[in-house]
Image (cartoon, rainbow, N blue to C red; front, side, top):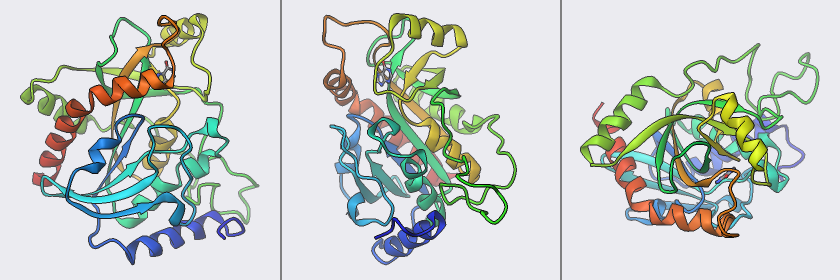
Length: 287
Ligand code: HPA
């Protein structure tokens, strides 16, 4: 239905569709990564809409990604939770992967919290929480890339009208990083900061690739988040990124490395992630 429309019109369509169905306007958006979806299951659920029903939204095919938008009110904040995401390695163009971010921004969201599972590139153990303080986009693609010449084609593929170049310095809001550290400290959660490298996947890294990423300055690697952050920053959203370390990148864990392990580790830390998110929402609502 939406395939033949220019991308910007699909954003408008999705916003109209959601405005008619959401009982309140979200100010905060949260994207839940692999195994972290349970945060969206807790009441109150004010609305829950499958991605398949929202114009332009990608369908999630990976285990651990429910694929629905949940509207909730937590800690005094009205929050749109994206329970799962699509990935480049599923054959989904980055413009489509990030379409939900453009829609959240058009709905009025001003702060976006992105979460993901990630492999560690140093000694961090599975279960470690890492605040993303910067990223390396090594996906070989960018969601803001235009498909045609700029003349007569004001919208990029994502339907975002970007003029010129988009600044990515301090993409991860320094004030939000500090707040997240304070919230973690108050909840007794240990948390670190680090640089996240994003790769296209779907292969996990070889030992040599993990070494390369380490030498490039990354502490963790994932196959998501970064395209969403690029679009969010192009739309001037404040961004906080949280990576949950689920394995060592480049290491074979007795043959157990793989998506089921990633999901199991993420699920085992879901309560800590929820405590952190709740604390953050409390602080955001009172700001
Ligand atoms: N590499 C890339 N992405 C990941 C990993 C990894 O080791 N673990 C979870 N997501």
